Image (cartoon, rainbow over all chains, first blue to last red):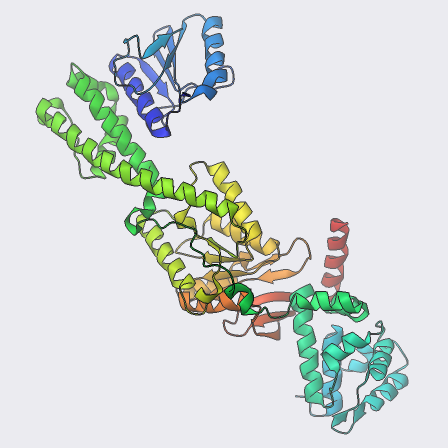
Length: 107
Length: 448
C-alpha cells in the first residue's frame, strides 16, 4: 500500500523532530513557516529540517509519500558529497524519540 | 432646446451617424454632397411635422452623408413605420443603444449592420435580444453543491487554517515539552520568539503557556497539554469534515455542464465567510432569481489547498460564467479586483455589490476598475453597482435575460450608456474624433 501522509501529519512530524533537535542543543532550520527559518536548497530541493551542532549537519526529510524519491535521492547525494553532513529519512507518525530505529533510517 | 422638426431631425441624424450634434451648422458636419443637394433630400423626408422616410430616401441621405447604403432588413428593423420626428428620434435611440452595447462605436456599428446579410444581421442583433426565461426555468434544480455548517465555513479559509496550524504546532510543542527531562531547559532553548508564538497560538483558543516550569508545574503542563489536544482534535475534526465537503464541491464545480455566475469576494475573518454566505443565499434565493435555477460558483463552499490550483480553478470558473458578481466588502483586494478586470476584459458583465452609498459611489464614479476594455472587441465595459442583495438579484435577472434598460447620456466628452435602474455606466464611447481614430487604428493593428 503506498505511503500517503497528510500535510498536517507531515508538519506535526517536522515540528516534533525540529523541537527535539532544538532541545538537544542544535541550531535548527526547518520548513515550518513562522516558527523556524527555512533551510537552503540542497541539490535543487529544500529539506524539511537541517540541524547543526558545530561542524556536524543533519539533513532530515519527513517522507510524505512515494513520490518523494527524487528529493530523497538528491539529499542522499548531497550528504555523500559534502563532509560533515548526515541524512535521515523519517516516516511519520513521529511518536518515538529520534534514536528509535523503526522511525529513523540513517543513510 | 430645438423647436423645429428640421432641427430635431438633424440632431437625431447626427447622433445616428456618430457625429457630434453640437456643430453650429449640422448640415456642414453631416453632408459630403453640395449643401443644396442635402437640403433638397432633407426636404423630401420632412413634410411639416411629419416624416416620409422610406428605404430609398434613407439611402439617399446616407449617400449624401458619405455612408454606405443600408439593406432593406436593416431599414425595416429600425425605421419601418417611422412617420413622425418622435418616432425617428426613438428609432435612432434604439439603434444607438444597440450600437454602443454591441460595438462601442456608432460608425462601425452602421458599417457592419447596414450591409450585413439577413442571416448575419439577425445573428448580430440576437446578441442583444431578450432571452426567454423558460430556457432557464426548464433546467433541473441546482442542488449539486453540498452545504457546510455556517459555523465551520471559515475553517476553509487560509487565515483560519493558518491559526489552526499554529495551534497544532503549539500543541506539538507542548507534547515535546512534556517528554523533555528538563522542561526549564527545553523552554529556555526555544528562544523568546518561538515561545511567544506558541503562547499566542494557545491563547487564541483560551489556553495560557506559563513562562517557566516552576509557575506551571509538571502537572499543570500535562493538564494544559491534554486540554489543548482535546480542543485541537475537535477543531481538526470539524475542519477535516468541512475540507472534505469543500474538495468534493470543487470537483463538482469542475464538472458542471453549465456555469452562469461567478461570485468574487475575499474572505479572511470568520465574519467575512458568514456575511458572504448570507449575501449569496440572499441573492440566489430571491424570488426574481431562484426560478432561473442559476448555476453559480460559491467560493465559501469550495476548497483547494494549493494557491496555484485554486487560481487555475477560479480562472476557469471566471471564463465559463456569463456574469461575475463582486461583493465589494470593506476593502479592495488584489484577488477579487483581478477577477473583475478579467471578467470585463472578456466582455462580460460585472455586478458590484457595495452595501453603502459611499462605497457604491466610489465604484460607480471613481474606481479605476470601473471601466475596462474587452480584449476581443475593444469595447469599453463598465460595471453595474447595486446596494442591496435584492437589487443585486434584480439586476442579475436582467443581465441573464438581457432585460436591462438603458439611456444614452453625453457627459464630459463621452457618450455613456447608463443602466436606468442603478445609474451605472456600462459602455462608453468617446466623442473625441482623434482619440477614436487613434484608438481603433491601433487596436485593430494590435489584434491583427
